[in-house]
Structure formats: structure tokens, C-alpha cells
Length: 347
Image (cartoon, rainbow, N blue to C red; front, side):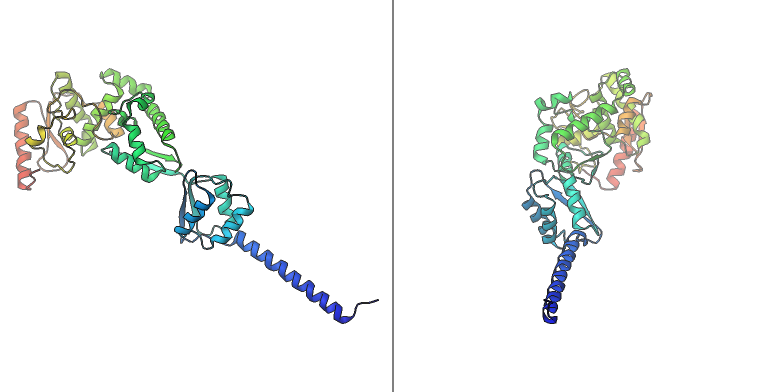
């Protein structure tokens, strides 16, 4: 018995509705997967801390308004079984990325490397702060490690000398690098830096690796012009050979802990500290700042000359006047002191 026109119409209508429903579902799924969902003009970064759950991750996304539609991201993440596979790191969310791209990136742990560049950082505490702002590492915990002689034995250095292990350069790390891995990497770079050639050069001038870096840290603070580093290093080497105190102003400033000082006065010279080279002979027990590669190489290749003294030039050019006698040095020092007075620099 053939269907009546009315029944056919009903069947066609139902079929059409089902088709529309399937089409709507398909479009919805397509949009959830492929519609751009990053809420940024160019790009933004998603930081996932070690041990974070998927719930914590989504809260982070919400708090920083990283996505246009969080619900669609969660749906795609659940379909790809990502909630059980959250990996820590720093992830770059580029403009135009869709949920499928985002989840696949997060699932694979394809995070953005962090570039660390450091030079001439004065204190370990400042270095710890810089590292904690760049990586997931906690600054207080890291600083504690840098002060732990027992822990530092594996790196063949103590708490006073550990700063010499960090060779200033630009390095790439993943944001979730641990303290241990960071230290191991820095030790590896330190070993690479101290080539057989540099080790032989240090031996030739009767200084250990640490001593070279300690002296380099002083040279670095004295020299405003890199070209003068070998000559300044030569002055200090001459003083060491003669058994004279280094009498380096930067060590006095470091010992007093006031880095705003522009003029080292007698009161500062009285500070009782092994870092005060006006009071104690030889090198201080550790570096007074992170020495640059240029300063380290300047010590290894110090200029051989007869200078025993040097003083900043009175023209404030950054260069120095060098002297072989104390009488000559006193004249140079008076010129510089007059220039300081003229500029009303009293401390």
C-alpha cells in the first residue's frame, strides 16, 4: 500500500530536521575545533606550574582572560583526553590559534624556551631574584642552595666562590627547569668555558679558576672601558706579586653594602670585612660581582707593565691615570678629588 502524500511530507520534514540537526552539530564541533580562540592581539603566554591540575590550568586561563571561549577549549581538551596529561611549562598562545592547535601543543609539552641573559649582577640575592622572575625556581630556595657549602661540594666550589660558576652569557631554558637542572647546566657551561687553554693560562699566572674570577670581578667594577681591563688587571697582579694590599675601592663598596657610593671616604675604609682589601691582604674570599668573560680573559692576559697605582681621570671619561710611584699617584688622586669637589660629590 503506497504512502499518502501527507505521510511522505512528514517523513521528508523529519529527515530534513535530522539533517539540519546533524549539520548544526557538525558546525558546532567544527567551530569548537577550528575557530580562532586566543584572546590577544599578537600572542600571550600560558604558564602551567609543576603539579598543576587541569582545573588549576583552566582557572589560570580564566583569571588572565587568555581565551575567547573557555568552554569550547575545555570540551576539546576532554575529547583529546588532555586533563589527565597536563604538562608544566611556558606556552605561547599565538593570535589565530584554535582549540585543536592549543590542546595538541599542551599535550605534547611543546613549550616556549626562555632566554636568560646575565652579566655584572652584584649580589647572589639579586641573581636569585632574576632567575625566579624568569623561571619557575623559587628565589628563597635557590639562594639557600647558593649558601649551602655541603650542597655546593658537587660543583667543587663553596658558598663564597659559587658565584664564579655562572659565566655571563645568553642561555635557553625551559620555564619549569628545576634548581638542580639549572645548577647542573651552569656547571656544565662553566666546565666548557674553562678550556685546557684557559686552565693553562691560569696556571701560568699562579691563580686558580676561582681566583681568576674573583680578581676579574674587581677589574670589572673598576673598568668603565673594556680596553683598560688588561692594564688594570696588570696593576693588581703587580701588587699581589709584591705582597701589597690590593686597596681596590669596589671591594670597600661591596664590604659596606652601599652601592650608591661615588666617593670612597675614610669612614668606609674602616669596615672590618675580608672583602675590604684596604684592611686585608690578598684576594677577597669571593667575587664582588658576577665577572664578565672580558674581565676574566683580561686577567688571564693581563698587561705586563710597571704600574702599581691607578686613579680615575679627572675628566670623568671613564679612563684612568696610571702611576709607578706613590708620589705620582698622589698627584693624580688630587686632580680627581678636586674634580669630585667641583661636582659636589661628597660620598
